[in-house]
Length: 355
Image 1 (cartoon, helix red, strand yellow):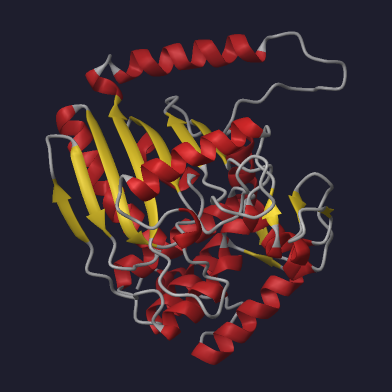
Image 2 (image 1 turned 180 degrees about the vertical axis):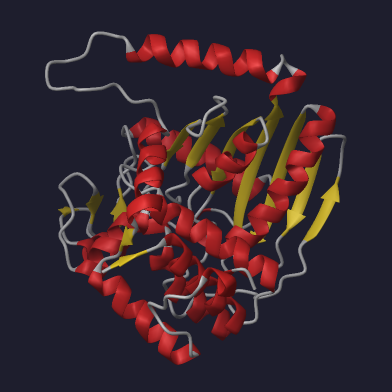
């Protein structure tokens, strides 16, 4: 079945509202989830809604957090998310950080007391839409072993960069410090699919293609020791410097016996206009990208893409043609909707969407 983005976004929003999330925050969280599905990152999209809902009902995620922000320097913002949903906490933090960056040229935002915040690219897109460049980091529950270790210790700890291009396709580099995002293994487990060799090890430190064994074991770091070192750096910025949990102390939402996650995020926002006129910057960016794309290609390569270009193409195509979800995800969403008296899928008129 194919769904429109509007249908899925409305379903998410109504579910969040049923769980006690305020109207504007419910819309923010829904938009962040469906944006991931539109961009082809289903592992961070609406498939996460059931676990968010479960933890909200249990009180492990605060539906209406009292987010506290403290400016401790001209460009430094400390944020306590009060155990709110990561997307909600992060959007509030980024909005304030963008305002600071437009005033001072740069903003450093450290967040503690948060939860899984979805796709890091979402916050890069927010910054690029405002003419800012961004660096985005988050930690996560243990997923990567230290180099030479056989047990998960660091999170998959994504690193993301965003640079405006003056077009609908900014350069957005969004990558985990692991071979693959753990969310893809979670999705494979839901679907009962094997995972490729080289992605993960089991609890005994042996390579595995079983996603359940991988989730009980560890995801391998990208680039071997280099990925491990990057993961450590992200852990320091997001966990230690922010005052959030770090390493094995970050709780996993998928563990039923866990506590508050206390995830940490770190955002660096730069106002391009404080360096040069934005139009000149985007002109230089496009010259750079055009020259890069003109590099002679390998025989089997049709086109050289820049990071973020595929994401933008996926977004445009799915806005036009709709979003298809795995049957297992649809079943989970239908069950969740039934429980909360929100029909899924539900086609509603635009007038209802605008209410």
